[in-house]
Image (cartoon, rainbow, N blue to C red):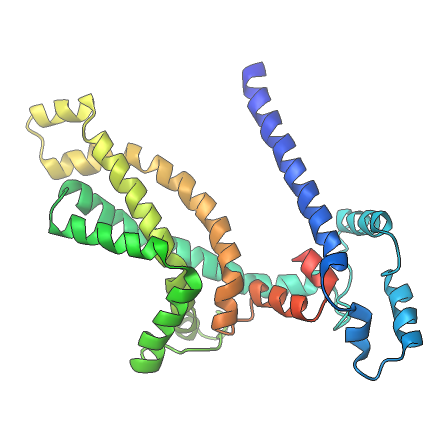
Length: 288
């Protein structure tokens, strides 16, 4: 029991340490971000007295420790504060945008799995053949191209030149399924290219390694069909690392949506973060 508890305790302490550092960093944003949030709210016609009064009202004159304890206390009670630009509760803004970001992340992960698994299986089955070499070259390109570059290229080719997909805008899933998928197609493609490359490379390597195991050699000696050996004996154990990797990939894709949502003007969490940073809306940045 003790051997199982120690790794769990270690991961828990690591997670708490990361959360503490992230929370301190987000509160420090108020000191690090350029500009005065109170002056931004009041506009160019603001007088020094009005700016000072608003800073006092928003708690911007408090010390870092006071602001941090106030923010953590509110967070523990489910209160993320209100936007200093719009006055709306931060929690409501985040929930309203989170659906778009999560949909993009889930669709990109599913697309990466759907494309990478058959490609990796075929490459492992036909190692060093033409398709294997071509796919390996393509995945090297996919994994080396940043997501925002892939988004711009896909938008130029598929939207501007071919008019196959809409360039900008977003149709909610509740309004139209086909419209939603059409507006999500380009961002999802841009987000999934790097994941397709990583997934297929990992699965291909695991499959090739599994195909050299003793139980696979025994299955071949029994005269079983190569395709049956591949799908029945080799694919299942080789997909375990892929399942772990896909979970980590989902979190990485959510981070990547910050730039992709801005390129395609999507009303997601990433665009909310960028808009809040440009307007010095610190409570929204902290909550996001």
